[in-house]
Length: 277
Length: 272
Image 1 (cartoon, chains in turn yellow, orange):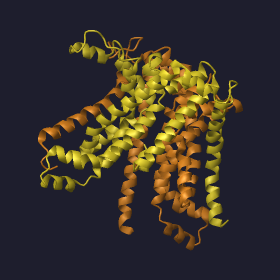
Image 2 (cartoon, rainbow over the protein chains, first blue to last red; image 1 turned 90 degrees about the vertical axis):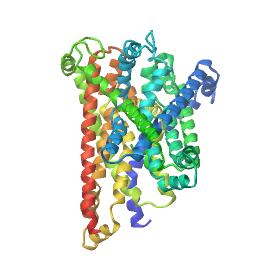
Image 3 (cartoon, each protein chain N blue to C red; image 1 turned 90 degrees about the horizontal axis):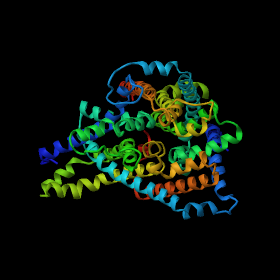
Image 4 (cartoon, each protein chain N blue to C red; image 1 turned 60 degrees about the vertical axis):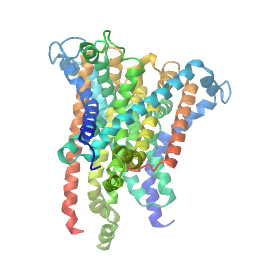
């Protein structure tokens, strides 16, 4: 081995050993529990698949993730567009507006929503005040609350890739389309939208993958009425000490995330820089 | 779109403004809730008082939670910055297929859902007796923080011209002197950025901490998590406000730093 290579290995070894001991080995040990249940090698997965309750949890997790992704993408569009068009002060202001929430703890943001969405909270009183509803709406401890909180946390993840795609669009293409006689809608549909699409899909992938594993926000805003897979895993560990079921649930979640990520990496031109927060 | 009508532009920007308000304004809700005089959370408050700030700082449990959080964050930051920096340097020397494999491994803690990481680490920490200790929590948080340091330092390293290293070696500097005077000096902004990310990642982290904390090592987020579910008094809003203030302080610091970095770049340009 050359001196250069030896040095490189020495530089990488400490962090790799650290990751191996504290991350890879614990994961492998956890997953091994899923297959060593006394009921048989795949008994835990059979329990997860056959139970009506657990099936409903998984379906609910998927529904929430799909809904959150759709809402997030729709809300991200105008912000990303405005970011790609604004200059100077207004651009900086809008960019800070998107990046600032990243820095605030998810727990704190979720707690804010608990205060706001309460039965007698400001949002319910506002809705009653302007006559939208007579009775206070149930905005907390159900899927509605979970979705509001999750959209709030995940929006920046959709905005940034979409903005990155929109800002790269050559405005002359739009001029050309315009000059060739296409209407506003046609230019949007046939030129602008296809060029922004990779950013849209990249952001949607991130949001969907993150939603699947979300824990804090659904646990606090949803509670017992809107259980997600991650909450189920946590309750296996803390309430029931059912480690093998927790391990099986974790493995299912990780495999789904990895498969979707693999598909996305193959189908989409994902930009690695988007991972940085 | 030159012929983009005015109504469409107004609509797009108004929509953007509304969504941005949705992103930023709700975070501010904890501030009025924290200066509430009543013994329950009500918004807007009917009477104002700082009494819950007093409660927070006089209560030994909240104080020790804040202290534990700071200790854990310091451990996590030191471990992540040291390991992340040397591996980013190592990674910049690797080419080809291995580069992709190693990068994937270093970024893996970002991809694995935190609940999975948390349950796995908790299980192993129980077995080796690291659960409920500052060291155990700090090391776990370092795993989550490591990718941020590798990314930030990696980006900073790209700006280091290999010719500078050759020039230093040609002038007779040893490897350690080259590292200290050329590499380290030039990656400092990325390093500090990575450190700030690491600190805030650890300070804000709840999921691993909820499992690991046990009775002894409760961090501030764990205490908030429990208080939301049990007491739900304005003292939670005080703790949340303090966390926001700390994040804003770090955010402003990092912004000032990156501005300094761009100014540095601008002054450097004519020389190259």
